Length: 167
Image (tube, rainbow, N blue to C red; front, side):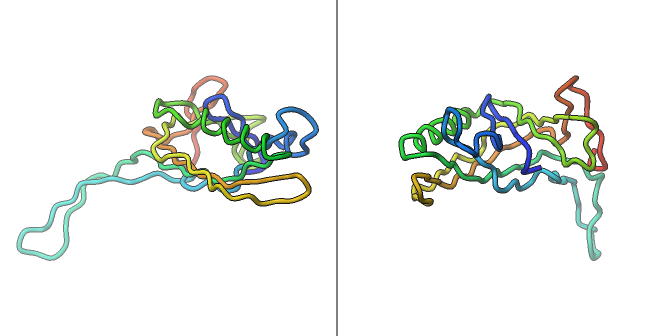
């Protein structure tokens, strides 16, 4: 999945065509890790057994999903690196719900299915201000947290639930 493009709030991440820096915008926003996409929180009610050992649990329910994206901004020169940072800030500034689009791994994808989760930013965008790279190319690391109240993915083509073993 990390090898495919993703999108949040009109910003495309992991667009491999930008990695060569042959066309504008001369920066590439890469996702290097996604945490929390493949599971959701479980909630249930439990009560202690009066005068005994243990507890009685109620029916478990799926709760929301916490997703943490981490990556790097790569650019040709410092000015373009700052443009890439600005693009990240524009995409992840609002706490309003937005669609996070992604494509599942090829083994389970049906055709060119693109899925989405409706998420909001619930942890701030953190950009580590350190320079890495060489030969006129610079990079910086970034991390942001998203929260999906409904943990079930939907098809981008028709908003239908995308049923998996997780659904």
